Amino acid sequence: MSDIAASPPATAAATRVRSDSPWRRAWLTGLATWAIAYSSYLILNAVFWTVGTEKAPPLVEFFNVWNRWDTGHYITIATTGYNPHTENTAFFPLYPLLMRFLDPVLPGEKLAAGLIIASAACIAALAVIHRLVEDLFDTSTAQRAALYLMASPFAFYLVAAYNESLLLALCVGSLYCMRRGDWWAAGILGGFASATRQAGVLLALAFVIEYLRQRDWRLNRVRWDAAAILFIPTGLLAFMAYCARAFGDPLRFLHIQEFWGRQLSVPWKGVQGALGHIATWWVESPLHAYVVVNVIDLVTLPLVAVLLVLCVVGPWRLGPSSWYLIAFGAAVFLMVLLSPIGRGLPPLHGLPRYALEIVPIFIVLARMGANRLADRAYLFPAIALQAALLIGYFANVWLS
Image (cartoon, rainbow, N blue to C red; front, side):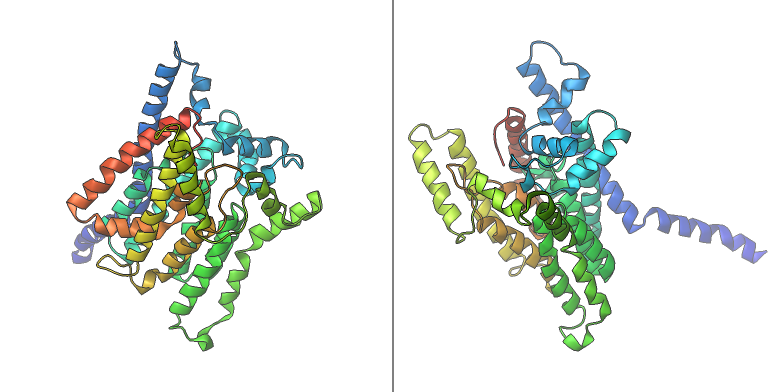
């Protein structure tokens, strides 16, 4: 009789543990953060339509304001494939392939498919970031890290029909698996990341650092599971093989960057170019679009650099268990600095958007955000700036 009487509390306790599981918290945080942000985007979407049109648009056209810039390339690739006469081979294949394969089962046209995939990947990325940060620190820091990422000024690209959220989800998924010692899953996710954008290959650096750290930096403790690192470049290699067969140039995705004047350079060349742009266009107007865009790029650069430094030194440093995250983020940052844009375009363009992939800066911000004043000091201006930039994106201003 006593055993029977004792069983309900045990069952209730087990239910409480299951309902409060780390992954459940992570997915709820990711879904809630995305939902709140996306609701705000829908309001801005509606306001933009109200101001820009005399009558309410048909519902099918409501989301057309999201069809901007790179989105057109992804839709074209998803619809007709790569074109040897355009610059669309600069865009890696995984995201448009998903658009193409899932479009028949998703509502709407290719744009709708791209937006749905981006939002699903955004929720996944936020959930995995929450789980990763909670494993490194605590639940409060994890919640702030997800929130601060979604509140950052360019975070709307995580739900736009771009490959940003897909790349972020795959990268943080791979990084989380490294943290847990699941090297094969880390390698496979890294392979998908390198098929999304070439920055995914940089996960190999994180893999090496975290693998050796977990083995006390002793080479004699390396085992056969280290071979999982070979999966990481498979996405890139597959795209190279396709380019070689289709266009006779395995590095076409790099060579086509000449369309934008991108070339390997010293890190400070982009800064010099951005300052030159500001000086040129300031004469016409200090508020000229090119002045504003270059200022945003230049402000982003030291902010990211300082936050990366704070990941390593100071009261909010992340510690040795996060070295692999910091190395990956720094490598992404350096990749942008080493390939500035030319041909009269903003040289550092794309830096604020690519900063979304530098996960450790949002972790260190989350640690700083334990102070309520610091929390408000980040959130209020970040959200306000994001709203302004999103309106600019809807208005077809080339932001990033």
